Length: 253
Image (cartoon, rainbow, N blue to C red):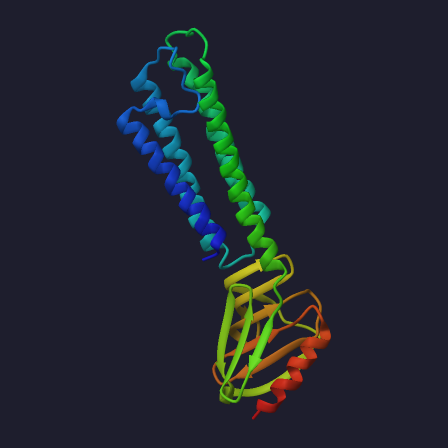
């Protein structure tokens, strides 16, 4: 599973747990907008915000489970997955801010410096959390998009790796090696896709299920046909693809 989806799923579970704690313990002091100088309907405020956090967390959890499953069949862009998270958080946060007002029973005498300090700290913490998550996801996407395909081969084993996707093959199973300028229609079974970069297990018309490591929309493409498998790969630098081809020709039956 894509590491970004694991992060989002974990965050969703964490938010859900916080909601459960608030709902059960009625600890409204943990809310960022809590003002000790005001009187509240403690039960009503805790139950509403507890449920709101549980809805937020569970929706994030479920959405990213679904996205993780869909990403095995179709390419899901990082911008879309990140946008879904922020839309979810902003929606439930605004709902909490707007609806919590009705649980205030008095206006209070104004916040002390200490309360204002804790409010600012809570806001900074939330912003920091969002920045950290965005940085992790963004960093992963940038790192993966700049990874190039590395091919290592010896008398026994062929190893292909790019980013988090890696494959191992027995060199004795190689039946044919050739290059083409085109690749037939293909659909992802599992792996990762970032723009024109495609890595993982794909279903290719005419060949069936095998591995693909592509770094662009143009050829040449190197085809390695094995006894019960195949590998199709390309490099942004066409000369490297040709080098891989020359190297693998030594193992062609």
